[in-house]
Length: 544
Image (cartoon, rainbow, N blue to C red; front, side, top):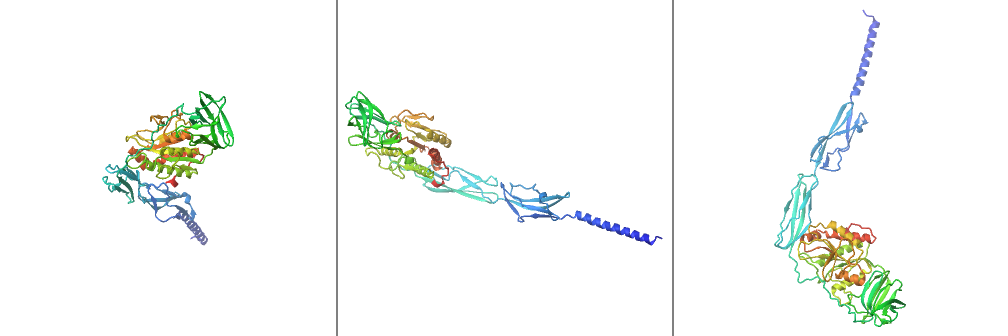
């Protein structure tokens, strides 16, 4: 029989073992009991637009036993497809003590964006009896689906009127799109005996034996005025004399009663002068369209005038520029210029010119326009001249004090396939850098199958065209009035821009109806704005 002490010891040992066992069990149980909580920042079901380039999945963090373990959070999106509409389950999980804890989140891919229908040209104009040809359209949608477009409405080409075509489409999510096109069916314009005013003028020449103390040739030569003529009674020492508040003498050499001289006005004081040969008045009996009017000579502005006896007087002043750009919108009033079935050239010329005027002024430049409405222009210059020549006279007069001078026109010819632009220049102009830059820009704008892009001068008498695109100087006589008169009697470089062929229907639609004439204008505007010392701004919204 065991002793009492032995029994007590056994009991104590059993109690200690029991206590240690319970403590170990409790410690082990605490280690295995992990509290994991997923915290979502947005509990609302997340919707993401299909094919979105920027999207955010529902954001979450995770707390383990009260400690932020967000850096261990992963997302299982193996079945997530951004390109397809539908509902997807995302699994947010964490691996902790080699055990995976997760929670699911539902995400919807939706399509709430309407398709976009883009028409090739909003408006179309055709003539009565012509067949309507659909210009076409494009449709795009964020779902990347291939969508069909239905077109409703009719165009009755037998009756003049304005018709509306409606284009509709929808995607598989029910998003719809609708646009309309306006089609104008019109009767051809009735034009009766319209002739472009570019008459050939027979200019009588000075007969060498007809006059004495006269001018038979006069022209500007940059820094001089060249005169050639006759002396009535040659002396031992002959001279051209300017008589005003001061007197200036220019020696001349006379042979067989003929003289030549280059007059320079750099040392002539500003003022009014009468011109003499020796002691008798110098006469200019040349045709009025060949007499010098005024021009820049060196740093001076020299203006010529003639009294009823053809005696020559001049005014000398310091030259300065009043305008940056002079624009002549060709034709106007009863002179329609070229025509097609849709429009008259004078309307196109004015529309283009007013747009360009607005754009120049938006750059802080000053502009002179020979007309701003449907009239031919101001009555300017000698009354004996034709209207065309008086307008050319105005272009020269104000062109002398303008840095850039040009005239806007549009072409027509007796066929329907010529297309492209034409640029007409004066016969003796050397400086073509700006115009060649514009031509280079136009070459990238005009996408033509039958190309008639030309940069040339045209002989007024023979109508022979001389085309050079290499910047060479033209050595022949150019006699388009809008080039010839400003150049010959005002010392002004003027350019004629023919923007398109109105007689080519396809080009007319591309150029005019689709608004590509503005691109052609912007090419001119950019080159001339930069030439005039301003920084070109392509934003034309204020001039539309």
